[in-house]
Image (cartoon, rainbow over all chains, first blue to last red; front, side, top):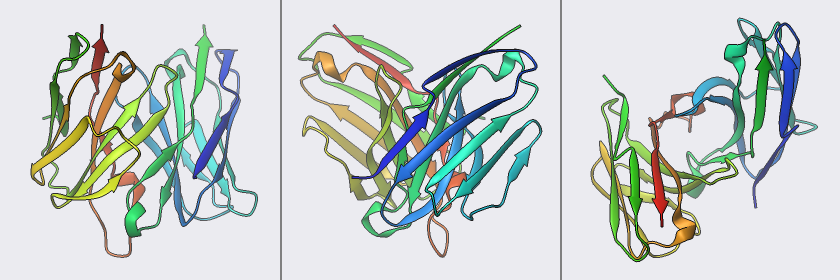
Length: 114
Length: 117
């Protein structure tokens, strides 16, 4: 069975800190790894990673994938209170009967205090 | 305009009742999903439809029956509701691309909070 494990489960920091969120996975027919941010409602897309070693960046957020070691990290620098959310990691299957299936990790709850 | 919309947003109902959650997407996508998020925030896929055809059916009790009248709609009907069905149900959609699935096209609805009492 496909599996995605995130760590830590929760993290409390102060504004300005840098955080690293971890995601490891075991999945057949790997296609891509995705990061989502979930505040109170719908998960919103952050990054999709398909190739090892290529960093994706968006403002203060960046992410990288290691397909050999089967993990990804999400970095957030100079954290702000608005970064407080649950960060979800998910792995997508390549196709066949698992087409489009995302297997999610349990999420990391990030709390940023002023 | 909301891309993926679900109704109702909140639903409180008694055990044993039958209820439905509706979902519509206006993105022109050909694939729709139902995900369940439990109290521990674990998001898990339940069903996926591509062009009205069921393609993913995870281990979900038979009491849950999805229906896709057309590719813009995917409804979820739940019979004989149980306490353990209390969760947030997310509808989502994506467009199948040539060469396979592309994850960044998955759009989630805002969720339907179901509480069974």
